[in-house]
Amino acid sequence: MVRPFAEILHGGPVDVGEVQRVREILIFERQQFAPKLIKFACLLVLAACIATFGLLGDSVAVIIGAMIVAPLMLPIMGLAFSIGIGDRQSMINTLLVSLTGIAMAVTVGFVLTLPIAGVIHPEAIQQIMVRTSPHLLDLMAALATGLAGAFAIARKDVSDTLPGVAIAISLVLPWRMWGFCWR
Image (cartoon, rainbow, N blue to C red):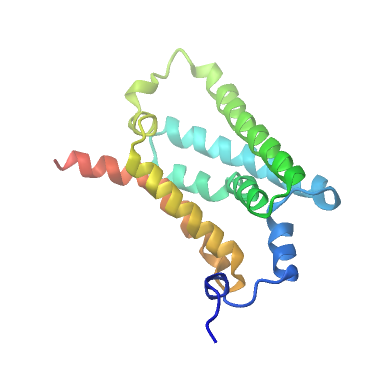
């Protein structure tokens, strides 16, 4: 008997219990909304602080650390999952959480840099400049990284690779920049 491709990727049958397990990880639903949102907001604010200071300090290592802490991948993957299962309410919830998270991160960065706005010149900071000009290869790397994250969440035995997924996407731009330096 030939196993369906989804079963091979998942490592076993994809039943209602497995869909519910992934749903509980990715979707911000009423039962767990407040605790999940508090955890999300705290980690996001801390990650935005780390990222801001990493960018200002022109430090790739600190920026990578911020990306490992940042929880934005969760609602974005939740949005993809919601679209996949056709759940309109979950699509709206995860989209709103994603957009709110992005707005929070931008606000934290803005507030942290406001006092030093006249002293810092962003165009002189290499890590800022390299992250403001993505290319098609960056999009392709981001898509592959998203698939790796989805694969890791879908399989119980691969979830320990999620930090590696965050590191992979954070290194896309610096490695591209490094390659240009050698040309």
